[in-house]
Length: 227
Image (cartoon, rainbow, N blue to C red; front, side):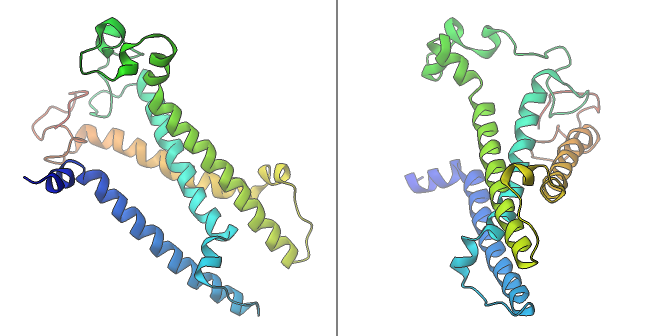
C-alpha cells in the first residue's frame, strides 16, 4: 500500500467529515446569498456579491449560532460522562467507574507507557493540562464561537433596527435580548435532544459494525460495550 493510500485509509473518517463540512458550508453560503439578495430586492435595497455576503454579519450569525451549540454539546457530553452513567449504553462508562479514575487506569505519571504522549509522563501542570486538554479546547472553541455569534447577531440586529428607524442596542443589552436567546436556545435544545436520544436509544437499538453501537447480540443492560 502506498503512503498516500495508507494516509487516506487511516484518516478516512476525519477527511469524510471535512469534505462534507466544506460542501455544506459552501452550499449554505450560496443559498444564503440568494435568499439575502431576494430580501434586498423585495425591500428595494441593492443586492450584494457573494463575497460581501459571506463576510457580513448575516452569514456570520447563521454559522456561529450553530457552531457554538455543537461545541457546547460536546463539551457538556465530555464533562458529563466523567461522573454520570447510563445503564446499558455504550456511550457510558461502567456503572462503578465514575470519576476521574486512578493514575494507573489512566496510564499517567509513573504508570505511563513508553509510547505514551510526553505530557502524560512528565507529571505536574503539564500532565494536568494534557489530562483535560480535550475539554479545555472544546470549551474554548465554544466560548469563541459563542462570542462571535453574539457580536455578529448584535451587528445584524442593529442593522435591522436602523433600517426600521428603531433604537440600537449596546452589545451588553443585546446579550439580554429575546432575539439573542431565541436563536441561542433553539440550537441548544436540539443538540441536547440529539445527545440524549443517542444515549438512550443505543441501549436498545444496534448498528452492526459501528463503534457507537453495542454488538448486535449484546444484552440491553450491557454497559460501556462497543461493537
